[in-house]
Length: 431
Ligand SMILES: NC(=O)N[C@@H](CC(=O)O)C(=O)O
Ligand SMILES: [Zn+2]
Ligand SMILES: [Zn+2]
Image 1 (cartoon, rainbow, N blue to C red):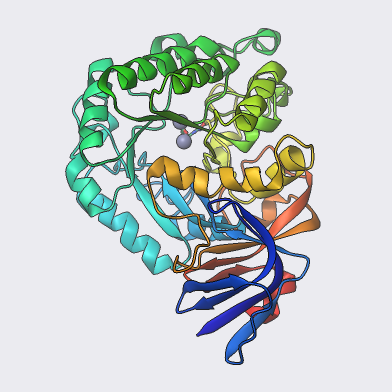
Image 2: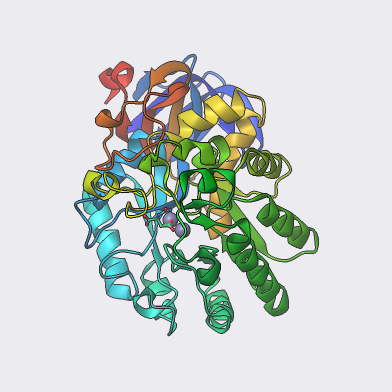
């Protein structure tokens, strides 16, 4: 089956191209991208006024499957991703049981392929049972399809274990993704340590809790010549460390979330548990530093850290509520509205941080519209003004701080291997 996408602005940061072109898809792959393709036996989709990009890739989501399917499962998570414009997502292994062996990696893959929406890329545990003691069977998991390793939800507290893990992962050409948090400095913390935590009488999480671990990881990566990826970077100090390390040739990469780019610690005023997240929302000067890091390339990727929780786990006293927020269905709109429209990043640079940037972090040949590549494609309506309504989410999670936000720009069509996996109302006649 051939499909012909007509007349869109086609942006492909992997090839540094931005043109008004037609895109021809044959057998699920990109067959041609050029002016005015004429072909009689293709289904034509008119996309004038729209933007076509490589399918968005999210390298940090929690799909809670197996074990916590009441929060999210692979099916609902995959649908939520497709609606947000994502064609691929890497899912964290902090499930029950944790994804720490090849059979569980297989489980994730087969359930995702049954769901038939996006490409789900399993991340395996660094340590058995995520207990931080013994290295998990990373080789087996890599062979089964794990794309990276992480104990996310928790830091890898033991530096010797981290060093072993980095070296071991490098043998399979995989990266360790670390949730950077010094457990002793973090202890009991609820929100960013500062004026607001004092005002609200909540235990603070100091910036140094993150920065100590970022520094440690950089030191190990430097010493061993191995790679490390810093999850959800949130402080000015972390950025400074990563920028410096990169300039010295250390193989460190990092990601930032839409919420850390747009919300400060003030969002928790009124004890709003939807704004309770780990790492915590920080200050305006941290946001300024993160924006600078996006601009100068210190930050490699934008990732949602989509962390669905049940309402009952959020609707309780602040210090008992779960950490985390959903993000897949709001990420693109938040980035286009608050990062691109505000002039922080060009549209092309923002798309790069959501396509080829994350693909590169994982060392995957994805996030491109080059000829022959799988037709994983996102169609964006840049002018669509819409209001976030958490009750309309396809995710099971309703825990968002963005409910009610007016956003400009939305994914209207998502294609995986040339198949339409999501289409917005106006695109319905094409699906
Ligand atoms: N980010 C969060 O606040 N929560 C995540 C864990 C994590 O990403 O560390 C979760 O699994 O709920
Ligand atoms: Zn984390
Ligand atoms: Zn996470």
